[in-house]
Length: 259
Image (tube, rainbow, N blue to C red; front, side, top):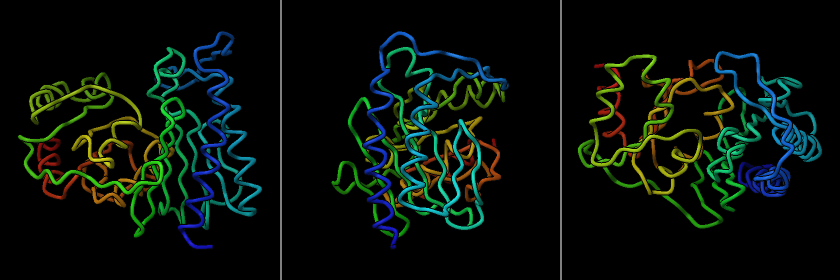
């Protein structure tokens, strides 16, 4: 099975699984619990049910592939063909009724992301990126903007509080770069880079299931996505991520991030 076929099946799984969170969206009885992590992250019955639906579908379509999901961890091996899942990327968006939450599914080969799916259930948008095979939004080809100068860039700063806590001086600098700046969270700003709507995103405090499914989408659309040191993203990356439309813009952002 080639990557195009794999991507098509994964996109269909994401679209079908979207019905699960949408049954709970803006409804009561979400069964909100708090994770035992540094951010006291919330988790809902929708997060778990969505991941179960995706896992079941992947196991049926791709028997023997490893699976790594946010809610239920690792099943099988990640050394060969494998999948990485964030069932609801943006649970705080979801539980507050904001439609900016996403669903992330990535296909890995020996830990290297090959296919990335960003599904926005409440917006009915499906972004698909295939390494070496281009990027689409709801089946239509998309590409990044050609912006090369940071002064002209549309920049999103994800996880503003975490960025400030990490380095207040850096946060102050980021608040002055680009032509237009917005604060946001989660996967959607990165997808907007791939779609040619904005030019760059800085992000921090992420887990592999937050960024590895996005990387093939950005690269397939012509952009660049790395860690803050300019290195390729892997299962062992430290969670600091920068996405840019062009190599020139990416280099300029790395300069800012490193002072």
